[in-house]
Length: 596
Image (cartoon, rainbow, N blue to C red):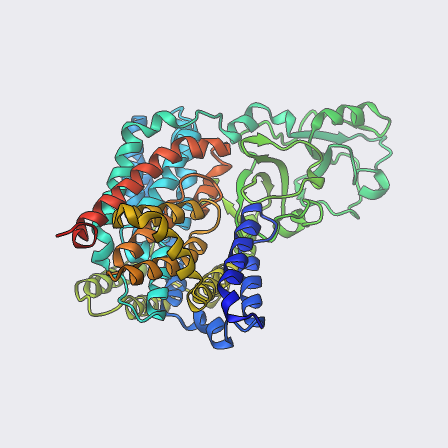
């Protein structure tokens, strides 16, 4: 057991270690949070009921229901129809930029940000290609617009709902829609206008990764044919010595009209087989010049035509592939897809593809089989950022269900005495009745890593409050800033939270900042709401790095961005956002910040 007098320092030390582990990416955020909670539980700082309280928290349940509702909308109504309608008439870069950011911000105020960006990325890239605009000039604004729009309503981002969870646990008044509306609209309009008038000039103009592929296909894929006299005929891949080639690997075989992909090690080669190799294809010349009996084909399906199914996908934060080599991940069999190339931090990763260790945010160029999309939905390791499917119109049954959900949502918003939790329950119930969500959707969409982060963040926050660690930090902040007034204290708290969210998750930042905010307001003897709002908006201002927020990670690879690209435009956007937030909060709560 930890002596009570030492507990605050112990908790601060553990939280600092969590921060370092997440920042250095030694282990995932979910594992870091779990380890911290286990330590707090073993040392007696948290009771079992306090550790598990997050599982019964209304705000956590609301986040999970919102994810399912968003899934139902994405699955059944194909928001691509809306995207096409928005993009079709846009003719100029800045005109498209303004329209895209406005529409995305509006959409992300009621729908989870991550699927909005994942769905829109292919359409934004497609518009850029048709109009000779690099994706790097479009995708950061796409991500930033969802972050901005998500702060207009309570349901727009997990940060506000997690804060409400803390407020409920501490028996404090929770956030209402009107608490966020004014600040949210101000920061959204300010951010969009800044990017439209100034920020767009700070965006890089990188060449599209997929365009680079089409211009340099022979750097990625080569095609060969087995000759009649070849020594390879009748041998499997291992016997033929084609399993561990230097710098290349066999991705598929075309045998007559039959395509074999992925190619297993026991596959027996036949005369006339067309072999497709991926990787550093300069080494293919050595194979052709050898006495194995293979040559360049005269007639075969060629990867030089534009119909080759090359798909772009990004590794997400919770991917089970992270820190595994391509070979050990069994990627080809798992996804029925071959990795053609890997791009990281704006550059193609060199070396044998099978030996490359996969990292969060890697952009994979994939040669895919027919059921690739289905496998992506099952394993949930990737965000596909290529436009793969055709648009279909929803049936009348689904349209009626959507109208009914809209009417219910509007009714519940008007009558504010009905809280968010039952409102979401009703909407989710309608979706289940109309079969818009299935049990398979629930299993697939509710990621255990995400649930662990949400639940254990509340437990960590509880430990900070219970041990008075929050008071300890709050006292230090007050000693430093109180001589300069309450405005200085608010600014200091907001900046600390904003720095945290750039290196850990937004949920992690709010779980650390909330206990400090509640301690500061208690010591000052004032309403804590302006400080709670300040840390909420600061925790959501993830503009500085690609790792600070999932939407930044999605666009990181497809845009060919480097870390510095986010900082270059993210810093001024962040300043505009923070200044707008502070001005509205200070104006609304003048009695706390001025002697009135």
